[in-house]
Image (cartoon, rainbow, N blue to C red; front, side):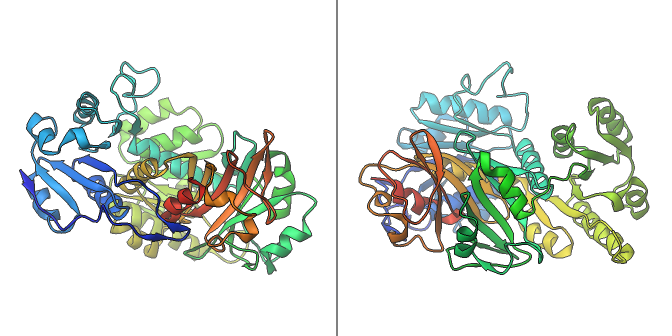
Length: 484
C-alpha cells in the first residue's frame, strides 16, 4: 500500500555556487529495503532533489520512518508484481536493491531490467556472486553496480593503512597523475608557508596542494592558505615527479609497517588477505576453529587464538610494536573498547623514548556509534553501511565524471571530468573563475596526450580532461561547472 509523505522537493530549482543548477529533471529512484543502508540512501538522495520511492516488507520499518523521509513508501514484497506496479516502475531511472537477501537483490535487478529501468544497483554480500569467474556475472544479473559491503570496507581500511604507511594513495589520469598524503612536521620546509609561496619556491617542478585536513576540518586551499605543522596534506603531481615530491614532503614509505587485526570475520580476514604480502600482519581471533582455518588460508599472516579485548593478550601479541590496530570483530562495543584499551596501554608505557604510537581503526555497525568511537579512542571509525551507501550515492551523482576517488575522513573528492562545449570552466583562465576560491582546486589538465599541472593562467578548452578536487557535498556543483 502507498503511504503519503511530506511534499517532495524533487522539482525545486536552487542556486549553486556556479550559477543555476542545469540538471534537466529530478531522477526517479526506487529503493528496495529500508534497513540502515536504505534509510540512509533515501535521506541523502532526497536532499539532492531526487524523487524517492521505497518498497519494504516489514510494517514496523515503514512505521518507524513515516514522516521522517521524503519518499513514497510501499509496504510489500520486493518481488511482487503489484508492488512494482504501485512504484510505477516504467518511470524509474535507478533501482537500488539493498535488502538483507542477496537472492532478492539479484532477482529484483532482473525484474527491473525487464521493466525498462536503465540503471540497477545491488548490494551482494557474497564475494563469490557477481565477481569475475563466478557462475553468474553482473551482466547475467543485469546489474550495473555491485556493492560488496565487507570487501568495500576492507579495501577502504587497507587504503587508510597505506596512507598511514606513506604510500601513494590515488592513481588518476590513466596512471600519469598521483595524489600522495603526508603529515606536516614542524621541521618540514612546507611548514608556516603560504600555498602560493610553496608553489613559487619549488617552481622547477610542478605539483599542487589540493586539499588539507586540519583537525576535523577539511580545507580546499587557495594560494593564501598557510600550511601548519600537524596538517595532513594531499598533493597532486605527475608520476614522474613523484620521487621529488615525496622527498620534499617528507613522505617515507614504512617498509616494516606493522598491522594488528582483531577479529577474523569477513572484514578482518579480507583485510589480512589484502595486506598479506606487503605488510607485517598479526590477526587475533577468539574462535579457535576459525583461527585454525585462517592460519591455513593466510600464508604470510601470523594468526593468534585469543581474546583481543584482554590487555594481557594484546600485550603478549605485540601491540606495543604495532603501527596500526584494526578492530573488526562483530561486536561494536568490543571494537570501541579495544581501541580505548590499546590507547591506554600505549599511554602507560610512553616515556617519550622511542615508543610506537599505534593508530586505531574501529569498525562499527551503527551510525550513531561513529562519533562515540572517535571520542573514546579510535582514530578512525567506519560503518560499512555508510560506506556502501556513499559508494551508491557517488555512482548516481557522478554523471559525466570519468572517475571519482573519495579522501575518506577528509570530506573531499578527487575527480576526473571532461569539459563540455560552452561550459563555465571554458570561459576564462582559472585565476579569473568566480566561485572557485576555497571550494574547488583544478589540479591538472590533459593536453596533447600529456597531463600537466594546472596553474592560474591555465585555460580549460572544450573536450579537455581535467582533475579537480572539491568537498563531497559540492560534487554536483563541480559537474555544473563542466557541463555545457
